[in-house]
Length: 93
Image (cartoon, rainbow, N blue to C red; front, side):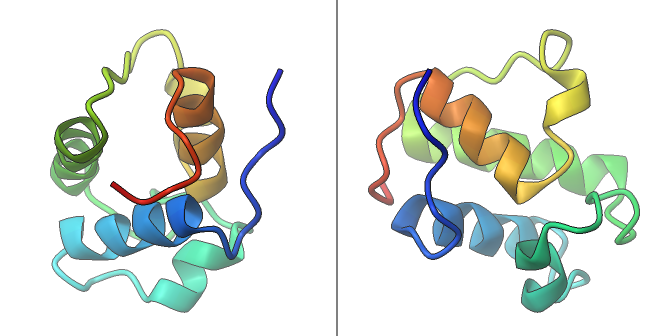
């Protein structure tokens, strides 16, 4: 198992940026990167979440199986861990 990219890594920062973008700026970057709340707890809509997943898949060339990893994708940390498990490196795009 790979270790998770640190919160300041390019991958972590890029996933957080894409989450804010997918929410049309509705989520503050500081709250998204804090990791203490899920996207849903921060008020991200399901449509915004799907836009985030689509953005990640397009940018990093990875398929994110929402059914397989449903419980782990609710935070930036969870997404980064999942993507690293799919072979995405710690560089941003």
